[in-house]
View 1 (cartoon, one colour):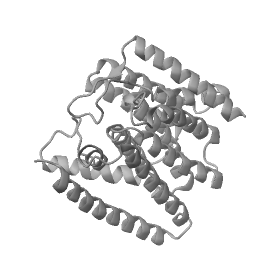
View 2 (view 1 turned 90 degrees about the vertical axis):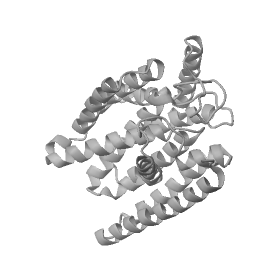
View 3 (view 1 turned 90 degrees about the horizontal axis):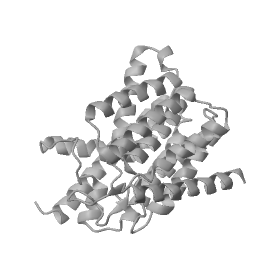
View 4 (view 1 turned 180 degrees about the vertical axis):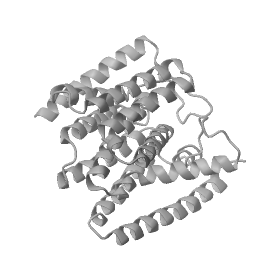
Length: 319
């Protein structure tokens, strides 16, 4: 009953935000790099932050440093959605937020290289998560998949308060109701993709530190493979990797191949959940078996990805 009550509250908050966004013209206008063709409300993903806030208030302000970092990330991303802030401002806030997450994770008590690795992974994944938010439903489907995997592991090995994950995923469900449509009512915006990435990364960091096992980073395999190989392709083509683009595989499938975008989003989430479930099974095996699994998975997925993407580009993309 508590979850139903929280779900209803989040629906109310989202609808209230829509009214404010409509009044203050917080919209996403399509351009030549967009995967949509109509004006749509921007920033609907702010509900992820409010879901975490409800948990924070209800459970006695736990994970306070994490929540402070999440708040800074959310505020600067929301302002960037509206005004387009300078890269320097965003980078400074992102840096501070990552430091706050690292402090909450007690990374500062570990060797220095742990902090460096944490910073690289968190900044890289948050930016990848943001760039991957390009078609209806993909952020919702993928976040539900990753969140479900983290909750399954939490049932197996308690490493975080389950309701932080549960409330966050309720926020994702509310967002999905308005976004997982042919004509979306809203888009996540930077505020949404950055906020949910920060929440999931915090939980993933807690899991990795609790178990001492890096294999759980494979909970982000699908996004990772698409993002990394897309960056490599753009570098080879001497493109600015920080500019908006439509060259991820899911974008070629949705825009050039004209496949159903909701189906693409669903399949991205489904693939990640299946891979993650295999990771959970393999995590009980020996270190050598885990390494072999990880190596074979990444190599096989990369080869299949590159072959399939090459085929789609040659068949559908006009040079």
